[in-house]
Image 1: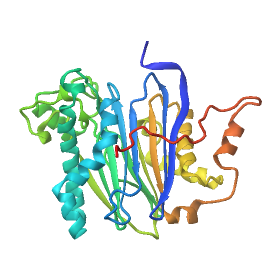
Image 2: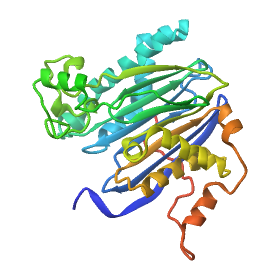
Image 3: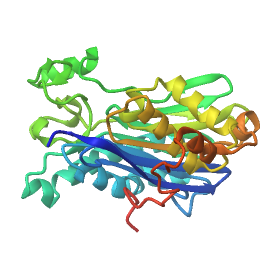
Image 4: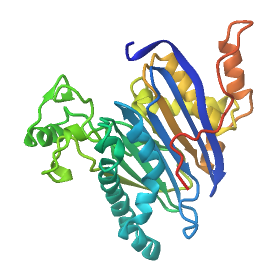
Length: 334
């Protein structure tokens, strides 16, 4: 059996909620891949002691699903365990939150390496990680890999992460300094991204994280929230970005709202369906967060996603969809 199916699996795991004046929607679809290796997380209230703080993330797995599932269950907890997070709770200085999420990536990677799947079962999986902490005043994004975070505002499209590809000059230099090479735009001719969690076959125990061929060190960016401009935040794996530029994905979301859709889970589902129609061959996961200004700018009345689905289907057929089944994939363990 190859890496792709004869027919895509289009049933979706989806989730939606409202909290702190935000509308959350998430969806995941296996698509053409033989296995589903993605995970995602939506935690509306990250900490009961911090009002208005949410955590969302997408993890795109490869070589198996273990790394992505582990990260989906535990990343937020690793953030909360850091000294910097404790300092943030006292000071509300966003610099501490940046340090906390940076440390969490490295600590989770170390923990992952000690799991039985890697120690005794020779798991070789890895995953990207794109995580965002939404506070009342900022959005803090940490990224390792080629998943992506994009903020859409009334002023345009603002990418809050950089795709970590081996052929980028700084990434190539680090890979080569660690004894690796970039061949066919891949690390050692194999891995198509240059930062990830897991992938320990590319990591040397004698090198610090920042000098590894494939590093778990994230890049962290901060967006200052503006209630008069912020529309929505989108986190998605490369199954979306392989077929959509950042601005195009935003237009798709706005068009869905313009057709009258009110449910963010269905907005996320329809985004994935549109990527499938654009011939995405990968697993697809997306988390969409709508800010108050989104509905003012783009919300309209109409039949929404259900109307779109009816129009797409030949007479007598029903589009395969689970109608918004709540996802447990990548949910945080309580």
